[in-house]
Length: 387
Image (tube, rainbow, N blue to C red; front, top):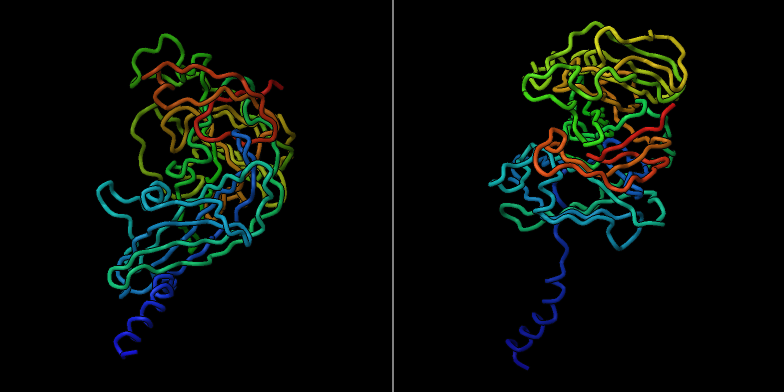
């Protein structure tokens, strides 16, 4: 056998292994800053919502182009979630411009917002691990393999209603990664957190799904009393101790331009508010309250169902609504938003923001579905049981 033939045979034997060679490890720093905890959404599924931070660490690496991401549970070979490049674009911050490729420049960080829906009957994972394929400018593809995080096994808190009766659009709610709640990372004093990860903006609506009372004609010049939910009683969702309050802040005219917040704190964003500790390291915040309506004081013990204040439009708020959230610290800055469920509410189906103002196709409520121990997902109309 000639040397040339032996060389060809050797090359043929090596080709499969060369083709299957794994990409080099990605030169990135990747981590999950806050471990996810499972909760049941109003779709009946168990969800995990969290963020993966990826930093292109070295200056000479060049830009990295995320190609795909897979999330695996424990030692499973099948992924819980697979996102290709185009799908990733809708789940990242900073979000690239429409005509710009998704990339991570040297020294920059990309935050991927991850929303996992567990199959019905599937066990909750103990750990999650991540595979991200990234393209490089000069060296082909590289692979991030790891960034493991343990799932928080603690059950989420079940709470009562924050509002009484009526119908409410659960706006900017869980599952909307580009919302001003989940999508807002707050960097203050060395900490990067998401206080509003599971926050809801509860906007009052009537039986037709409108936020404004019949007869309101000029959308740009409404009064607070034109809004269905304005001045509704705001209720304590659980027994607890009041940790912070603020009152006397003015309310803005609805749907007018808002000034930039003075600070990324409760005082800078919430206007008039109440913060109640309802369990160890669990704080319920009620924001944008009506001026002069706060009925409780710091240090006061309160009971579930007690009236705390009235729904208003103070602080960084474009229209009357109640901002409600749970977090792990009494302050806004430095806190992490934590999931929860309402013990009971009725689900009337989805509604768009346009339909809220009578634009586009008229809103039609779906079949009323009673929900127990679930968290309303983004943009559905709900009603809490009367007290």
